[in-house]
Image (tube, rainbow, N blue to C red; front, side, top):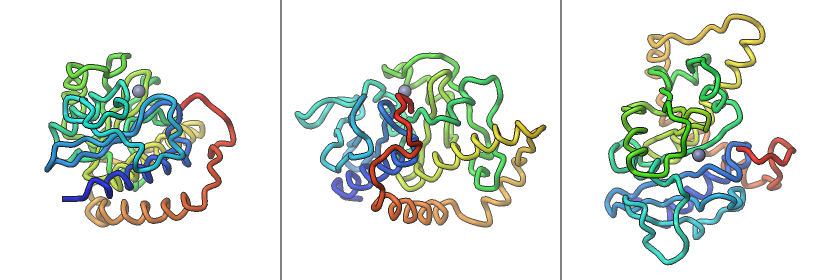
Length: 242
Ligand SMILES: [Zn+2]
């Protein structure tokens, strides 16, 4: 079992990296699950400064979203996290973000497909949760579960993205790749027809370099960058979103 303190530390680091990358801001949240104790650790809600989060800032809840300590409740969209943690053994970490580029695939009537080899982790696509609504109750959490199935990510219409992984390293990597492939897809579309990577080519590449290895390399790289980050928004702008 991974100690709660270690999970808290990793969760704070992962969220600060998302903030450094301009992928989380006023809204959005990240969680990690300790299955042995059925404890969800989640970043605090709306308006908290995600770029400065510390391990002790995380909110601990049960799978019904009930806080386990006296200090404040989870973000209103906690059912995104509890539904996935409770149902999928491969969803021990979950990020809900409103990233600038991937969110556009939840707005444009265009299906997301990977366009780079790294994007091959999304070989079976990224399904769309069709309702334009916040996931604020367990019924909506269960509806999201049906949409995402056994896939790595989902888009929420007019809203944002949900990415799951075995651990926070995997969630960080997958969310970075989804955002980057979305950006490249759009930039390539300005040049002409976009060539996507076929499911067969995706699977072949995935077999060559394990996701675990890529995720760990990216984690170490971004942890190093975060240590010397000056805490200014990466975009140099002060935006409400993400
Ligand atoms: Zn949201």
